[in-house]
Figure 1 (cartoon, one colour):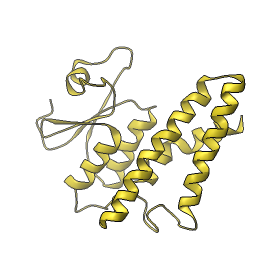
Figure 2 (figure 1 turned 180 degrees about the vertical axis):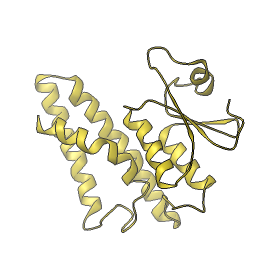
Figure 3 (figure 1 turned 120 degrees about the vertical axis):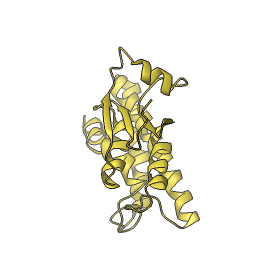
Figure 4 (figure 1 turned 90 degrees about the horizontal axis):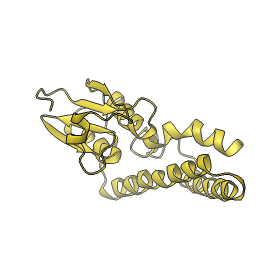
Length: 171
């Protein structure tokens, strides 16, 4: 485990879920050590750090592990409060941000089905994806970001999927 105060991120560069954490660390200007994982040959550190799911991302900070991207994003926001806030301070707005960030996982699931399926099943997944994206669009409304003028907790999980979703829905 990492013993310094500098966090270590176990990640995979191509993983949209891991990209959420890297974007959060960048937004908060937190310096960290990056360790690329091989999904076909997982390191002992990854298996020990995330024994439940055995996947990235994992953040190791002060010899403690944090798993799951949205949980890691909240942790980063709380541990480095003097940096840009990614979660709203208002409890209701924070709850809404958590809801919509979690909903982004449903978009990701549609994307996986869209990518993996063919024919009629792919068409069903495409329609479902478009409906979920329309819900996001309605929620966004005229705001620049989900947090109004501030890029934050809901926007971050969507960034890695933007081009991916557009290319999948266009095909």
